[in-house]
Length: 351
Image (cartoon, rainbow, N blue to C red; front, side, top):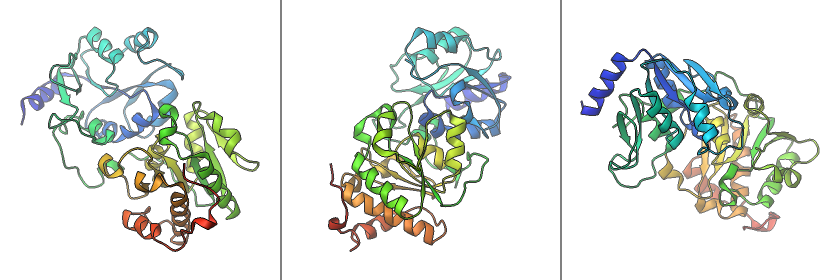
């Protein structure tokens, strides 16, 4: 057992409660659900969470302390620092900082209690009693965010192997509907166009889905509303309200096509069949996903014509197979080389 593990063990033994400062952004929070669920199963847990995101901690366990922080917000603002600092957490608690920003660090300093948090480098000034390296070997890497968050959990800080199915244990306690309705999430928050497929891609795909008899629900957040008049047609639905409503709408969608966004992570935790289109990052490097989430990497997604055909084939085969696991890399390779990928039949062009 390492020295840091011994220190953590002693802090847990002394602390009456463990407090998790939950990430501020929906995608980060959803990617942290496994870590939070493991904590809740091990220890009495209090979750400090933005009120607006409280539906996203459903089913984790423990109790929630909420604070109001409407979107848009500046995580470096004094207003946010005051709101977080004034949350009344149990005295002598052990705090685990999943936020990792200046405001959460300042709150921990003012609370003056034991804490665990990430450290980018040994020289970085942080208030944490136990610092968990952002990278295990001290060099830059691209470990999946969900793995980094899990390493904040006592007992997992130096782990490189995980129990089978661990990242699928934090599902929402709901059952997803059949395949008549498809979720489409064409945005990517503030990440910008470099993570988005072009609008003609979504138009072509939506037209094919409507013609095939599917109902569509478009998921557009406050940073993506400019896409609404370009994509949403009469008979479609659009969802961009509070997270309770977003979850309910996703539950109605047996199939979903998204970018690498919070909607991908949400559907992963709903056990909902999903195809995620990565434009910017190497899927293999970013980590394993549950079997019902398939991924298209940049080697395909940079060609919008090819990607439309891969998605169409994925939808056909999901329906015909009554929900077999999502598309595999071998399956994408087969679809990629299929004669059905005839560019003359597709009315869009790669950007």
